[in-house]
Image 1 (tube, rainbow, N blue to C red):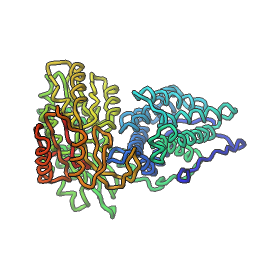
Image 2 (tube, rainbow, N blue to C red; image 1 turned 180 degrees about the horizontal axis):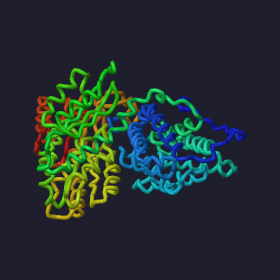
Image 3 (cartoon, rainbow, N blue to C red; image 1 turned 30 degrees about the vertical axis):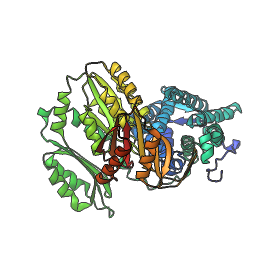
Length: 562
């Protein structure tokens, strides 16, 4: 394929000299692969066959690898040249930073890889392939129904390619990874023959392409090639400090309200194109307003965190220095009081939601923690772990409410150490239906079974738009076209939202349905939603219709049929 990056497959045996990888070198390779994938994530995103707004594969894999790279420096300074220590840090960062199904699978590959190398001060080519093979096996175990023609197939090809080089008596690391990349490319180009949906769309598997880019990043590092963005890394200090701010937020949530001196946790980002932000000046001033002050970044962009009783003064002080972004002010006393009220709860409820109306519905049904996310904004494993740790309930139930988020929630359940149940809801209406079946007098296990059954009875209709041109199943789709889906599957295209909803009802509603609930999004007016509801009621007069302002982005309507 002409658009595929070329892999160097000719090995100059006489120049081979990279026999082992140290901890420091591995850190360089992971960082290089992270940058390499970041600059090419749009290529991977464009390969996604389903053209709806969602957490795209390239973006999710890139964010997962960035988390792995950031965590490399959590190793003690005296152990930074120890391969096993670096690999363990990498795996932990990937596991907690994993987003979307592609990110979770990638994190499992890295975790399985690290499991072979824990005790190794450095590794050779044979160990590299052994570790990669363990990673592929771990990824297979993480997926309930493994499918050929995906990242799993491409990573298997990489193991086979590296093994072939070893069998020739070549032990050079660069040669082995080059062989792995060459066979991964062959496997990638065969993915359309394994998955008809890829063949119809004329693309290769997106996750497999992302995995190949990671291997190419390793090779570029070993060859000393200058990677895009290497000389102008974007705000490395800020990126390395994001976890510090997140850790402070976790501490905020665990505070006792009686111990809180400064009541508002205040966060924001400042940007200035001229690079004139004075970080020391901000830091000195905020120390006069409160405590837990963190100011990280550089004169062009910095992130600020402070506990204060006067958040307005903090914002007023920095406003002349640049533009403010991602402002967030939390009342810590209120949050701590909520946590105290949960002490006697047997079961804590966590749900993923996006949109003020949707969030309020979940809260009204008893959800204790909302993890912000959904379409295009897939939360990480770490986001779920923090939500779990913020609750003192004996058992936890998580509602992911999106098919691309379930694996991250399940991964969080495994690493949290508590009793956590994941009800695999794939849509917001399924999550709401599941909550209606919740009984706080029962155990988490009994509830999760009951809630799963209730969710399965909900039919979800969704109206959104195409983010790219695509050939999908029997549909030739143009970017911007209205799409109608039934239970996550593309059912039709339409010229406008009204037509899309009416066509969906024609296809999906049955005589035994009793209730229709319509949640309209942030780009739909109340008048439009009300008029549409009246039109539906006139045709399907046996159902009750409720209309709510969901406020969700990207999806004009979410509709539940019960």
